[in-house]
Image 1 (cartoon, rainbow, N blue to C red):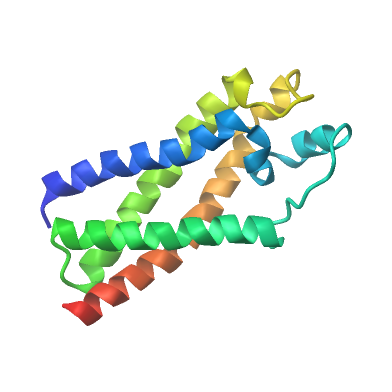
Image 2: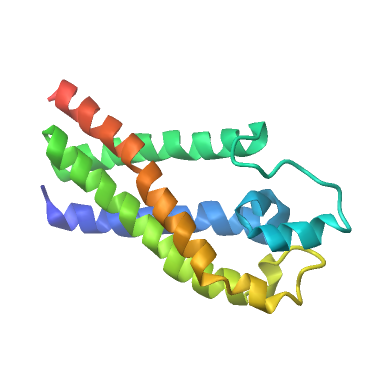
Length: 164
């Protein structure tokens, strides 16, 4: 493994992830409504039309599935570029990037930006400071994300194993 390439890939992954989250969120916070805490969603739906927000609703499932497939493709390319030539090296490099992004999402995007940037609050929920500062909610979802990340990263490892 080339650690300098891996470090650059980590920075690139964070930049790409931040853009993929923040650009749609700033343009239309409702795009990510399924990732907001339930009490914020309920307050929003008091004055707006209800849309699907359950994890296995078609809209949410499609968004999340597309993101996982995109991550698999990027991590596969990143693993090979960094020099992964075995199942273990590909799995560990891809899962390392997954964890980096997962923790960055939780501890910076969710705990700092999501909690404090008024522009990304849902219309009608701007005054819900306490609800936007729910660290436990975001931490639990980060742990769920860590578990879900095993799937594309294991697949990445298998593909590298089969190719090399």
